[in-house]
Length: 233
Ligand SMILES: C[S@@+](CC[C@H](N)C(=O)[O-])C[C@H]1O[C@@H](n2cnc3c(N)ncnc32)[C@H](O)[C@@H]1O
Image: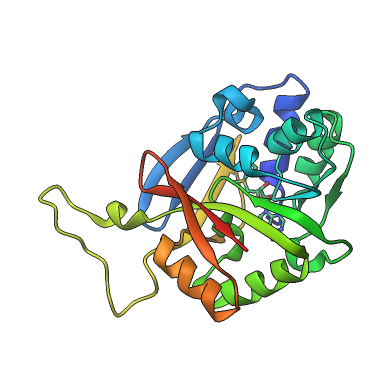
């Protein structure tokens, strides 16, 4: 996120200057609000999938794309040794201000310092992989960050439903790119972020990609709206 508009919004909320929400849209969906307080949620406000991921967490933890550090902080308070990384400078600043002891501004592929027992990627964790073509390289990199018997807990959604019209037909172009590969746009206080690629992966696609790099992938639970939590090991 080149202009770090996401980070600016988090910083505003953290410093008591919350007045507007982030606006997001994609190549297949209209403008929608992403309420800033949601990015500061506590355990009771988290979806079941995220609560489940936190319950399954063990050992030393890496929270990838930690944002303002909501999951990191919960685990830290429970006594886990946890590190949060995020490519947004503002997000890491906020995570630190909120009390995260170990937070670093770095992109996932550039991070290779330590190994972990649990790696978390939450709030559409596959988004960070950007496109189907890059999934295997991201998974291989994540593998290099795992200790023996380590696990990755990641959530995503099958967004086929977004292509359905009122009569139940779908308009997915089968000759085009995978339907979960989206162009993602974000604006905040009138400023627009450089467009990003953001990937939603259905469970079977994730499982197949995992198999190609020698990982097992199992579904832990389904969420309320075509979303799921997976455990990769
Ligand atoms: C949808 S937000 C989720 C934030 C947080 N996990 C939560 O649930 O509130 C995705 C986060 O991933 C970060 N991110 C995106 N690409 C990344 C990358 N390649 N490496 C590290 N962080 C990344 C973004 O800056 C953003 O904070």
